[in-house]
Length: 102
Image (cartoon, rainbow, N blue to C red):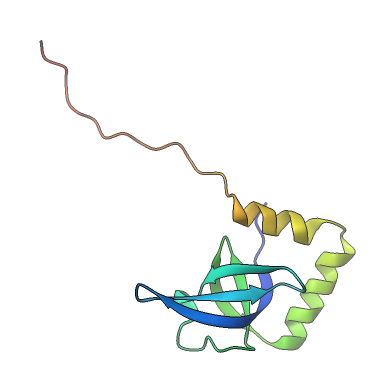
């Protein structure tokens, strides 16, 4: 399962024209792509992050409520962030090279 996790932007940087940021998830920080929320991504803003991408903004009170709920479930927050660090990737599809000729 992959959840959208709320976190606070603590730093931003431009990497080859792509807005990236450091996001704090209640004491755990991760590098996140901020491209989808670039117009509103500011230090101190709260975002919902899914598999390494900030997908929307959220207000501070809702972010804190959600983080507290996740903490109350035990290791869910750490497990979700670990899953986002190493998502399962589908096998690469090799394009067909056509029929073999001899």
